[in-house]
Image 1 (spheres, helix red, strand yellow):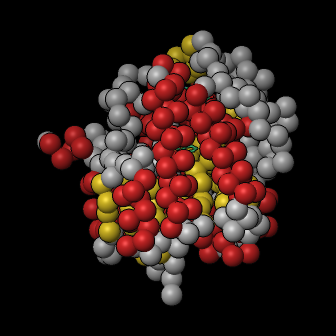
Image 2 (cartoon, helix red, strand yellow):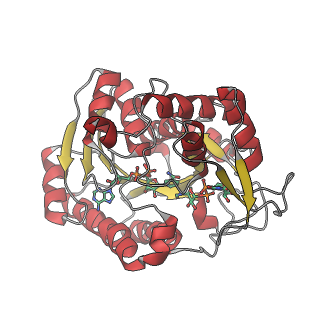
Image 3 (spheres, protein in one colour):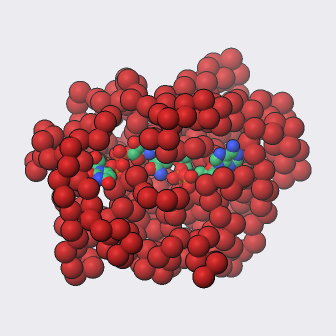
Length: 344
Ligand code: NAD
Ligand code: WQD
């Protein structure tokens, strides 16, 4: 019998792509999302891509009792915990909102899981927990660092909470997947990243400049210690990332009690490299201006991705050109994302 997998935050960007990959492998997918940063249309699109139905609960992870009911009624074997607020800048302005949603929400989920005896959790962590590491590529045994914002700290604390839970209750299996910079979209162009308002991440910003919604890219600094002075990141195609989750579900039995795994390509690209790749894909120039550094940014972040290969038998398949092509297809087909498209 294929496992029954609950995706908290499964209507979101990474959750919806993971739902597609799990459904394609025959897993039973149940989505639990309050739609605070997503649209039900994403779930309908996942159903369209896969030709399968998804059981969806519009609910909040802060509701422990309802979570318990869903875990029992749906006979959940594994939870993939995507649900979180993720806007770095907003977390600086409103830390309590972020700590409440992300930390209290996770405590609520873990309590529900403990109470009903569901003991497998795969967690959406982030390279942000490394802070500003002294060495690259970053391996999983590089100690966690000093985060520059409440969002980052919430991820770091959540990792600690799950690790402590495993110590107290070794039956709990915890997989901490540290994502680097997910970009791109499903090849169908039906699902993708749909930021609210002006995007704060690089790729959605470039896409909106390319489609004419925004005027030019603001490059945050060209005096970093990198090959061209602009910030270097390890961008990973969201479909590769989604497949990493499937591998984590498949390999759960043989993983250690708490397993930390980087999901990344192992390659670093600068802001100018990404703009160049995007220009090659669309066949026209992307206007940009060099501006001052953004507070909290680091020179470079890229992973040693060999553990994922060794432990999960997973490695990224797509390159930066695929990522730009697929982001562009999604952007062209959905210039205003899900919700606003619905209203046109
Ligand atoms: P997203 O905002 O698209 O998805 C998160 C989903 O969680 C949304 O659908 C939102 O409605 C839901 N949600 C939030 N709070 C909830 C609550 N209290 N109850 C129920 N649902 C709730 O974000 P994403 O990019 O898909 O990110 C998924 C996860 O991966 C997040 O935990 C994020 O922190 C983490 N992550 C993302 C990135 C990235 O760059 N996108 C990088 C590293 C880690
Ligand atoms: C990438 C590079 C910027 C926008 C963030 C979070 C991190 C994780 C992923 C969730 C940097 C530069 C950006 C722009 C620019 N999220 N840039 N102009 O900062 O690496 O990571 O998203 O866990 O926690 O911090 O990603 O896409 O914002 O920036 O020049 O308009 O692009 O300076 O070098 P980042 P990003």
